[in-house]
Image (cartoon, rainbow, N blue to C red):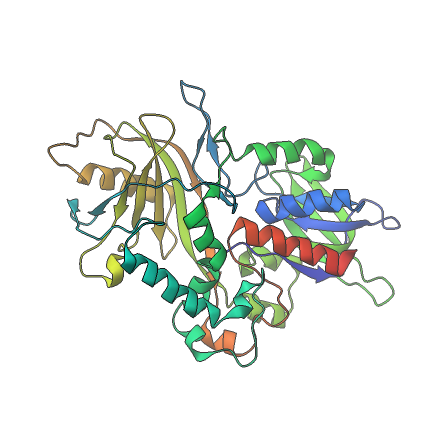
Length: 394
């Protein structure tokens, strides 16, 4: 879950008497959208981004002989006018390497059971109209059914918009290079960006007369003081990310409630040919969900011989541990029609923490009051960011 929020009274700029309007933390999906909109709205700002580029989870591999880009992060964006492309997939239990028989559901299709299932799911969503908003704008009291384990987050992520996208298609760039959006933004933002940088320390809301604050950014060229009137937070709001902002006790208690999963995305070569994808499905688990840590799926890319691998874990794992398990999982699947040469991971990124959640007790206690947070989907993030900027800063 990618989140965006505001903290009143922050500071940016080298001059105490001429602060920036904003100091923004993060240049992923939310951060890039926010920065471009701030530029359009005539606001002054500086963005602190830990990576050497914009785009967050939008990753593209360019090291192919064909020159064709291979995306292995954000794969598509919701667009209600695009025609659906039907995917074919094979299901394998990655604990044994054996195929597992599961009824495949291709949407749209003529199976009446599928149509009934979709309508039943839509009926459940209709009971939670408050989830149609971009943010978590929850009623009080919250319907009990919504508080069942992970139900709230599942309904939010797998929304009516997503169902529409599955039925009618998602937006994919013809070039297969989703990162092109962010490279264009990099050119526009220019010197307003501090790449490979992080917040070292902060002093916020120093006085009632001057509610701005100061951030000391650690950059490749040294420490840079930034004075700004507002902080715009466009990073995952974990306690680790926010502690440098001098959180008080209440702030630490609030943000410490977030927990997330760990997600890793990679491109691998020198494996077997697959029709479209191989999905990890386990025997004996609810809905045949895969046992984690483990591979979620192997998916063909637009370049023959390269496959996209998605891996998940409920706990932190070192990158080398993940890579080793990915290769071992690929080697495990050996059948007469499948040969494996020497699997090699040629691109790898961690997308962690992923899908932040809080306990049911926190939700019941009003954690999401104020509609200050949103879910991990590009169309939700951008819509939410737009509303936030227009509501608070225009």
